[in-house]
Amino acid sequence: MSASRKPQFTSSFLESYMYELMSMSDDEILEGQDVDAVKQRAASRIAAASREAGRKRLATAKSRLQKGDEPIASQASASLEEIKAYLRDAANDGRVTLAARQLSDMSEADARRLYTQLKQLREGQGEDE
Image 1 (tube, rainbow, N blue to C red):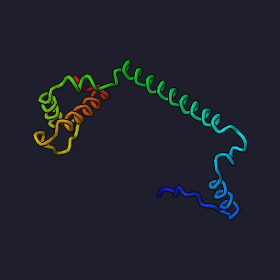
Image 2 (image 1 turned 60 degrees about the vertical axis):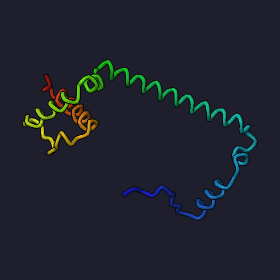
Image 3 (image 1 turned 180 degrees about the vertical axis):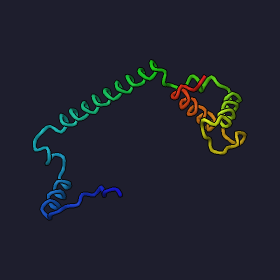
Image 4 (image 1 turned 120 degrees about the vertical axis):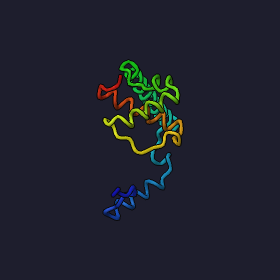
């Protein structure tokens, strides 16, 4: 069960205080502070957080590329016929279990996704040629 996102107030004081805050304007809450300066500080904090998140994503992508975790090259270089042949061999292998599927009825995207997952699984176990 998930908890309700609506706050459950335990006292009428808290409830009335919350509704009073929600009904106040920005100027009343800021009490004489420059609204534009506050907005500028908030925008600069958001921009800095966004830049930092971008740097972290870039560092993660670079480390994955260096490790060779990206299956894109092997997936893109294989033809659909090679992928289906690989899946047929895997289905008859016995070391993996594939749900009963007709390769002729499988879409190209599904076949490529299954091929990529199976290659990653086998490479992770040191079984792939």
